Amino acid sequence: MLIVLNGYPGVGKLTIGRALADLLGGRLLDNHSLYNIAFALTEFKSDSFYQTIRASQTIADELICGLPAGTPIILTEVLTEGSAWADECWARILRLAQERGPLFVVHIHCALAENKKRIQGADRALRRKPRDPKMAARNHGNAAVLMGAEQSNYIQLDVTNLSAKDAAQRIMRWIKTE
Image (cartoon, rainbow, N blue to C red; front, top):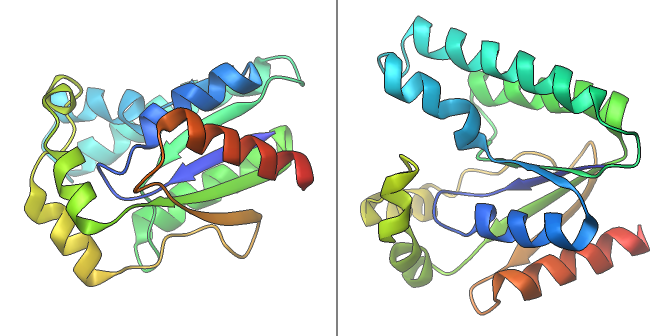
C-alpha cells in the first residue's frame, strides 16, 4: 500500500509518519529527503531546483518499486490544488499507486495556535524545514485545498490534541477498515 500524509508545514507529518512506519513495518520517505538536495545546491524555485527534485524522485520511485510487494510505503507531502508543481507531484503519486497500491491519503491538520508552536521547533532547522509562524498563519488563512480526496481512500485527521503515536494508530485502524 501507498500512504500519503499530506498537510501544511509543521503539522507533524514526519513524526506521525515515523510512528506509522513502525506500526505497519513500512518505509517512510519524507518529502524533505527529496527536496534537501535542491535546497542545498540550487536556487529555490529555479529550473535547476525542480530538475533536481525530479531526479531525486526518479531514484526514489525506482527504489520504492523494487521493495517487496507487501512493504507499506509512507510518503509526506504538501500538495495543494491549483499548483502546477503539486499537479505534477500528484501525478507521480498516482503512477506509484498503480505499482504499489492501494492508495490512502491522510490530510493532517491542526489548530493554528498549535501549528504556530510546532513550526517553530528547533529540530525543524536541522532538516531545512520552514520555521516561520507567519507561514502557518498564511496557510490557515488561504485555506488552499489539499489534494487527494477524489482519487484515493481519503480521510482528514485533526492532530491538534493527538500524540504522533495516537495519530498513527488512528490511521492504521482506518486503513484496516478500508
